[in-house]
Each structure stands twice: as C-alpha cells, then as structure tokens.
Figure 1 (cartoon, rainbow, N blue to C red):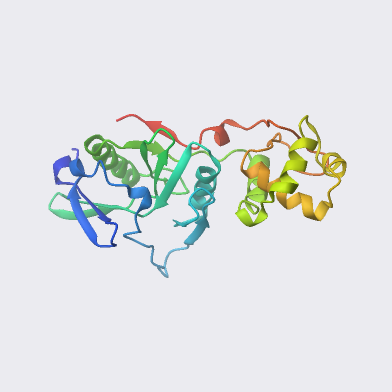
Figure 2 (cartoon, rainbow, N blue to C red):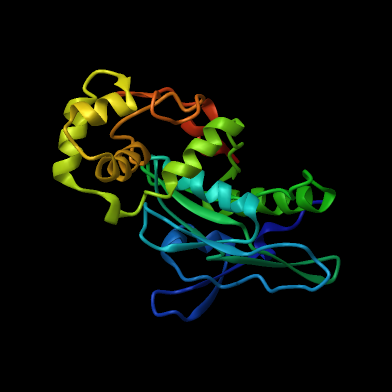
Length: 255
C-alpha cells in the first residue's frame, strides 16, 4: 500500500538558515540546490562506512557524500555540463506510515541547464533492497506532488575511464587554470595528436602544461578517448570519445 502523498512533509532551510516544513505540494519552487544541509551522517561503531565531501567545480561548494560510492556519483554529476547546480542533504522527507514516524534524506538534488530539479537516491552498494524500493515509492509520490523528477544514480563508466576521470578531477580547481597556457594548448591540439607531442609542440615545460591540460580535459575544452589509459601517447584533440555513463550523468524517471 502506497504512502499518502499529502501527509509527506518536506523539511529544508530557508535563505536565512531557518528550518522550514511544508507539504510536498508546496515545495515545487524551493531552490533546494542552494540550501544548507538539514542532515549529516553520524558515525555508528557497528557500521563500516565513510562520510566525505566533494569539492564541486560546478558550484564552488562542498557536497556531502555518505559513502565512497556516492563520492563517485558526485564526481560524475560535477563533470557533466548539463548539471548547473547540485547539493546533498538539503531536504528531509517526513511522513507517518502505519502509525510510525518515517523520514528520508535523498542523496542529491540537482538542477539541470533546462531548470529541472532532479532528485537522486543511491541504492546500497550491495544493490537495491526492499527498504530502498519502499523509499523510491515515497520519492515518486513526492516528485509527482512537487513537480520534481526522480533520477537514478549514474552507472560508473568502466574502470579505465573511471580511473582517467579521477585523475583529471584532481585538477578541476580554478587554480589549475591559466588562460595563456590554455590558449597555447588549444592551438597545439587543434587536431588530435599524442599528448606529449602536443605539449612539446606548444613550447611549454611539461610540469607547467600538464596541470593545465588536465584542467582543460575536466572542463571539456579538450577531449580524449576516455576508455584508453591516459598517458604520454594518448590522443588529445578538440573532441573526445566518452562512454555513455559519462555522457549521461543521471537517468531521469518521469513521474
């Protein structure tokens, strides 16, 4: 038996940091991607888990991740240009079910370039459980009331592409950008050529060029074949080849 949507409340913080609780039907205009967290994970001695933070190049803010799996999801969301804002733990859902108080904190709220608010809930690392499926039922009902879209978490790309992205992500911060150096690299890789050959052809010291090159790869100003290990012989050019898991950071479910 489904949850009655009108009984579900959305708890969030307003622009002043005050806690606000509204019915799901009144949450449609709340900018949850720009709100402070209403929840944070606590360490339980009987559970093996890790909570960490992802610094987002998209927003310039820290995004909470309650597991390493979710850290990977945050990286994939941050990498995709159609994701213009995202935040973790910025809303808590509360309802009563069979006489008991229930609550749920979705992993991420993200806003796309089309101004769609998407809710991402990640399943347990071992796979979806009955409890997780019940949570999805609640999320579907809330999304229908609030005008949100429910999205499944992105599937990580293959191990090589994922390793490449993790390496390049180290250089996502603006401090690794340099307009003058990037201009020379853009010209050097106007046509695809091996990485080290292009750096040498640009007349740049390797130690100066590589951080800027990786920064450009993160921001898609240059491209590679992500399925091939990144190294001196990697072909770098204006356009790369990305696996589907990197081209589509989430799968939206119309509700």
